[in-house]
Every structure is written in C-alpha cells, then in structure tokens.
Length: 176
Picture 1 (cartoon, rainbow, N blue to C red):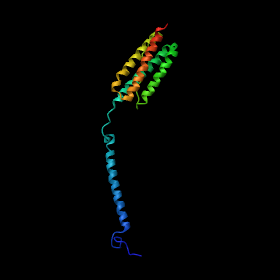
Picture 2: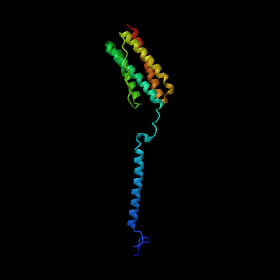
Picture 3: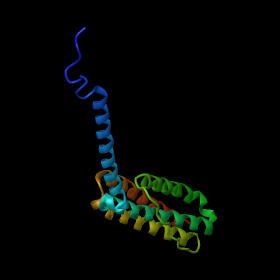
Picture 4: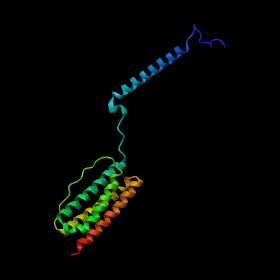
C-alpha cells in the first residue's frame, strides 16, 4: 500500500481539520446573512419599499361595483315597497346579482353598499328603476375608455344589459 497522501501527513493539516474549517466558515457566513436579514426586517413594511400604485382597472371596477350595488339596493327597496312587482323585478335583480359577482371576481377588497332611494307606487317605482338603469348603462359606457380590453368587454356587456332592463321597465311601467 502506498504511503500517506500528500498534505495529509502528521505535520500538515488533517482531513478533519479542513472539514472543521469549512464548517466554521459556513456558520460565520450564515450568521452574517442572518444579521443582514434581521436588520432589514427591523424596518417593517417600510423595508419593502413604496406601496405599488393602484392600476386604473381597480378604480373602474370599484365604480362599476358601486353602480351595481346601488341598483341591487334599489331593487330590494322597490320589491319591499311594491311586492306586486316581484314577477317583473326578480329576473332583473338576479341579473344584477350575476353582474355584481362577475365584477367582484376581478377585485380583491370590500366595497360599501349605498342606501336605496324610496319611490311611491308601482308606476313610480318602475320609472325610478328605469332611470337608474339608464344612468348605470351610461356610467358604465363612460368608463370603457379607461378600462383594460377584457374589463371593457365585461362593462360593455353589463351596460347593454342595463339598457335592456331600462326598456323592459319602461314597457311594464306604461301598461295599466
């Protein structure tokens, strides 16, 4: 068998000595890294930098959600004031709930529901709802220019639905 390997004889560094040195270096490097990470962590959220800017679609979505919530609240108030309109208003209310769900699925965060306005009589209720539908359709169309293409498509679809609701309500409001 050959003699000892060069560099690993009794007088020079041993294999276990080299391993111990590498372990000490690893521990020191890890300690330095941990101190720098902890020092950054002491800054709290400010250590992460400035908050990201809100994308334009978020404001458009919040406004569209507010519009839908206002319409839903008006429909609930109308149904409470005029239960005889249930057969006419329930399908339209269901569509508004679907619109709201579609809009909310694109946004993280809560929104505040507005308070509905009260109206008197079935004809007044239908007229007020038709006006609200027409205003909602116009508001959605006005937001199309600032929305991303996919959001603009959704808003245009909802706006067309709101306009058809207005026509339906006007037709029902004019019948005796």
